[in-house]
Image (cartoon, rainbow, N blue to C red):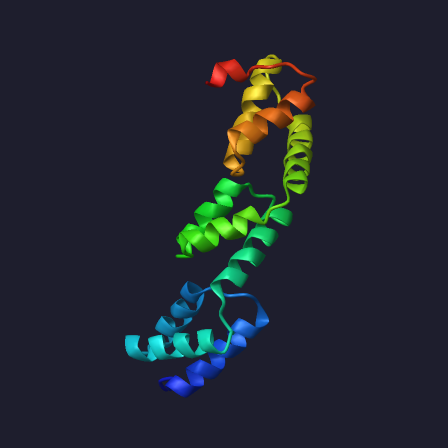
Length: 163
């Protein structure tokens, strides 16, 4: 296999960025896999940024939207994944602030309702604990999960057990 030139890699990277929103880290992995030098990679990234093929804040907004709606992840898990993709904190928080609170609560409530059907517990408190743990695993904040569980379990309040 012959080595990839910088121009060819720029063309490939632009095509890669055209198919979906990408962050700098995603493109850097492709460039590194192609065997280009660090300087060549930096020039390619700079050109892609300049020509708006890569835009970290646009990527973060779409990432938050997709992970919330399709994967049904909470803010904590989404923020963690954005951090893993080296998205700056200011861009992460701005993207997370764009979440519609009503939609966020509806997603969490529907997840908990669906999970409640399959959860077995020795009593309602046990079910509450398991559902709270489930919500935390999906990346939802405890206070949000507790509020939805109160609504779902008809006002029974086991919150004091978790403080």
